[in-house]
Image (tube, rainbow, N blue to C red; front, side, top):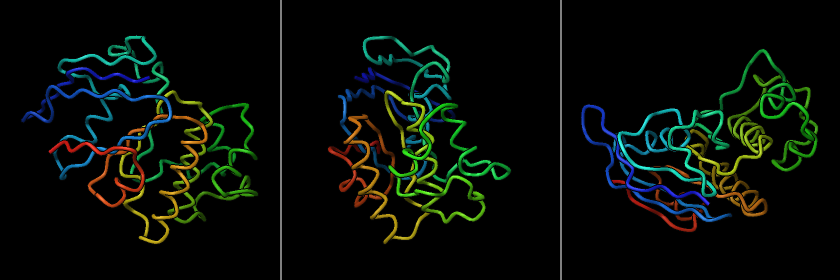
Length: 196
């Protein structure tokens, strides 16, 4: 269970204050709001890439507020898939786990047989599926998704939203999605919070 209590962060202006959230196993929450309202910064604070001004983050009753990102056990998927072009699909997966079942990981995201493919040949949707497979191989306690469906065309995005939601529910993996797209938020998440 992820518990965020009274999180606050400012840069030139206050992005969010007194933000609290409880996330149960398997629960998916979407956070919406206009560009610049602090959605991405909130995710970066939760996973440890940014430092909070104040507040506390507990994961399974352990205070992770000051832990470095690599020790938090939280996965993050970005708006555009962060793939290494000099590595093929399987070698990109190995960055998530050295000894995972790569064939099963690819099957789970509908990329069976892609192990030796050059990542430069992947479509946008395939790239996001690979990024998801890699994130899940690391067995995160929570998965954070930063607008991962926004750079894909509408039909493919709808399918990816359904598929990713199904995978997270099957794994009982809690997740937070940030998006400005209310339709995606409603179809992906169990509940929606506005940060505006």
